[in-house]
Length: 94
Image (tube, rainbow, N blue to C red; front, side, top):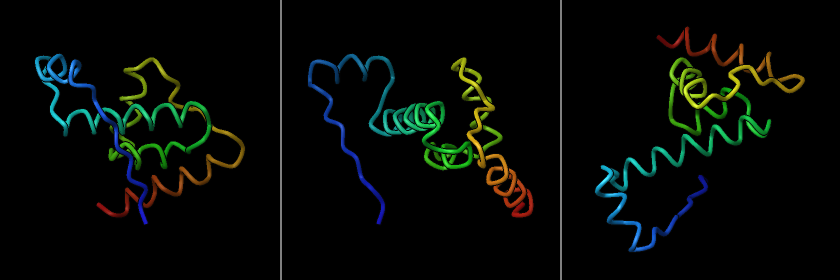
């Protein structure tokens, strides 16, 4: 079963976020992407796992990390082979 997280946005911030163009959907998307980036840079998730959490293909997640100034190659021992397999699987799925 998937893990569901809820974040309560205080009423005072809701208006500010709405004026900045944020909807519940865009906030959820940004939260997923930033959490994925954080977990990846702390070596908790592999690149493939973080891209999955961010709901982005790796070919989009890698430039996303770069746009944040984060490392795109941050491999703990043993993760490179897993990510190469994931990339190969995505290529063959096309």
